[in-house]
Amino acid sequence: MLLSVATLTAAGDLRLVNAARNKDRDAVRALVKQRVDVHTPQGDGTTALAWAAHWDDPEMADLLIGAGAAVDAANDYGVTPLWEACNNASGAMVETFGICSISQVVETGLVVSGVEATSIRSISSLTMSSLATSAARFGFD
Image 1 (cartoon, rainbow, N blue to C red):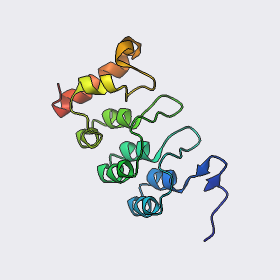
Image 2 (cartoon, rainbow, N blue to C red):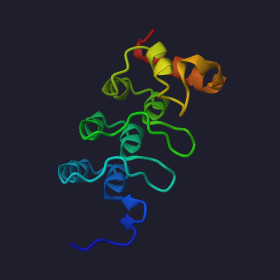
Image 3 (tube, rainbow, N blue to C red):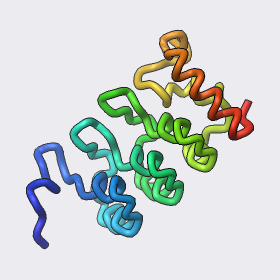
Image 4 (cartoon, rainbow, N blue to C red):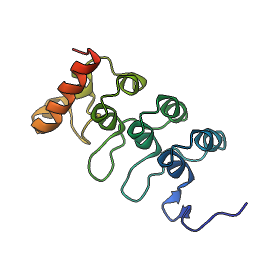
């Protein structure tokens, strides 16, 4: 099997994150079966699970979560897979992450990297507004 230099870097094997970025669910499934590291991010810290959330693909997300992907992995901009799901107003994706209410989103700190329930005021009003709007669309409290 030949692999390009772009696929294997010092950062790790990027085949999985590239497959997710390219919406290739079959490749993601095959790579998960091969036990390719689900945590390896692309250069800006974006993971395969973040791409699954971005593309609103709960089936791909289930595969990745089942293989141990971290739902709270933030990229270099602090964006997590859950933030992507909320930004897309994807109730199915939010449910895939096991989130039942907007307060649970906030309390888990899954939206902004490093946010704890005790430091909730550090979340920007724009993020909170986006979450509240998305939560209302899903019928969450």
